[in-house]
Length: 160
Image (cartoon, rainbow, N blue to C red; front, side, top):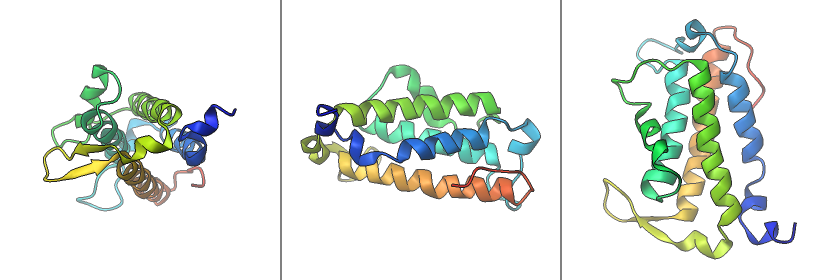
């Protein structure tokens, strides 16, 4: 336990619980349920979940350079030309992208938060701290969007 306190893991507890709720929201869904939208022109539920996965992979793998090369394919899951993803694939993407985050939080130490990385596709840099916070708020925002989208169609969702 004392070694755990030298890493970032204890400071981000709770995110793992949110991850489990995201999986619970997606895993039992049929293709028809994942195709629902809050309104015409908005993303279907499957695309919202895919967007959560793609953003995690973009920031932690593509920008920070963490994880294996096999993650790269998930970076484009939310592109407009992507096929609809089924529940099992979305569950796998959420789990695999979460494992990446969990592993770095268990390895990084507070001093590692200040490390800077080029913000690919933009001017300037980002720190690990900025990326962690950005992905947390992104998960929360789009998890809420996913919950609302499914819930407004009468589908039961876990309380986020």
